[in-house]
Length: 82
Image 1 (tube, helix red, strand yellow):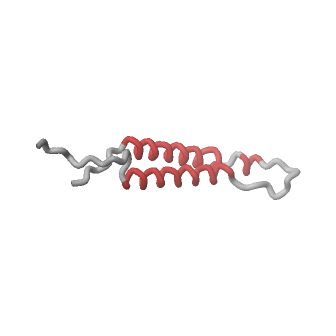
Image 2 (cartoon, rainbow, N blue to C red):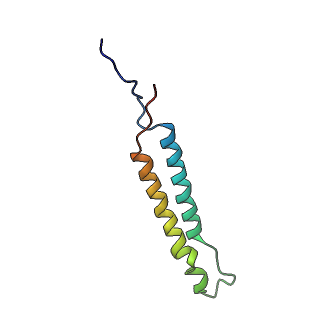
Image 3 (tube, rainbow, N blue to C red):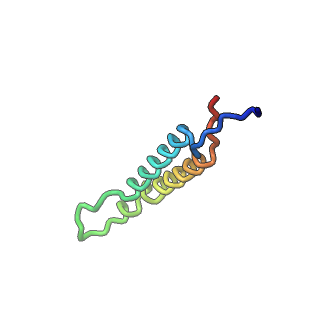
C-alpha cells in the first residue's frame, strides 16, 4: 500500500475564512465611512462635508486594503492536518 497524505476535501481552511471575514469587515467599514453624513441644511451645499478627508482618502484606502486582505485569504494555502 502507498502512503497518502491526509488531504482535506475543503478548498479553504478555517484560517482562510477568518481572513475573508476580516477583509469583508474592513471593506464594510470603508463603505460606511464613504457614505458619510449629511448637511444640516439641505438647501446649502457644503463642500467640506461632501469632499471631506475621510470620504475622499481614508475610505477608499480602507476598501483597497480590504480587497488586498481578501486576495491574501484566497491565495493562502490551508495548513495540512495530520
